[in-house]
Length: 155
Image 1: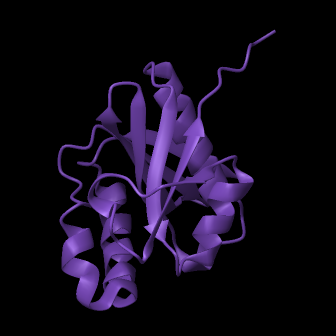
Image 2 (image 1 turned 90 degrees about the vertical axis):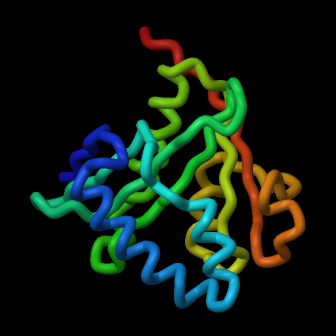
């Protein structure tokens, strides 16, 4: 069973997972890593989710306001040993639900064109490719997505 913990960026489990993510991204991004790292700082992020499987923190994600009504999904990561268990989808869905609860109407995000699994994750979860935004506008290695959030009526 996978448990999801809503927390913030001061959470030790979240910080440890982000450290693993940053090591992976440093290799992937190579010389461009400094550019991306400046946009991935986690201090002051108030909305993070940590996934726990068999009592072990194994995945995370975060949202932060990009504009009024728009949340940006950040710091999505699942430990390689725990991939293929649906953890990333659960984290993403929890982040979207949290954004809705906070009154946001859309989520946006950026990922690397090299991360085929991430692109597949976002596509299968209803995200559409959009022109690169903000700091990623002219970054050829980036691909950006957006998703309109829809409230599901409870019966």
